[in-house]
Length: 155
Image (cartoon, rainbow, N blue to C red; front, side, top):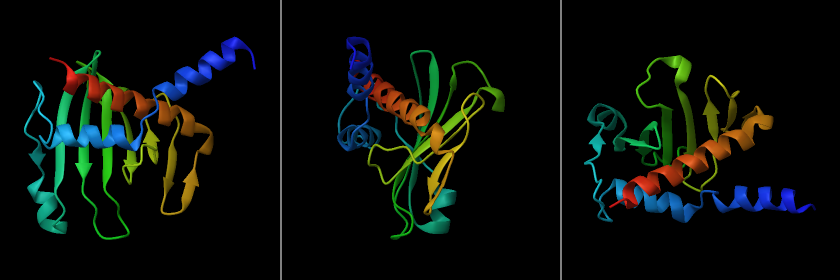
């Protein structure tokens, strides 16, 4: 393997989201770890009333991107806890700039992604669509986890 290819491999794995990174983000979300940027999560009571599983949503801006990050707790064995992101350049609106992706199971692996510049990827309920797009969505998710950690850890 050339030195250039090796550097690409090392760079891509160095920023990969791990389950520990995902846990750190949720710890910040719930205030279990203090941060200068702690924002009280919005408890989606209308959803929670229907399924008794709390959903928390936080919006933050980091690196010129606006992220809406949502944690949904598990609903029985069929629906594991998930961390979902809606992301767009800060100051924009509408579907043409919105991307969304999710980690079902909080294992650091993207299970869904769609947006205007990336094609659909979905690995849910045993059905996989758009396998060729998984690496792009994994990078988006890894970058979002890294952005959330930078945001929360900033003084």
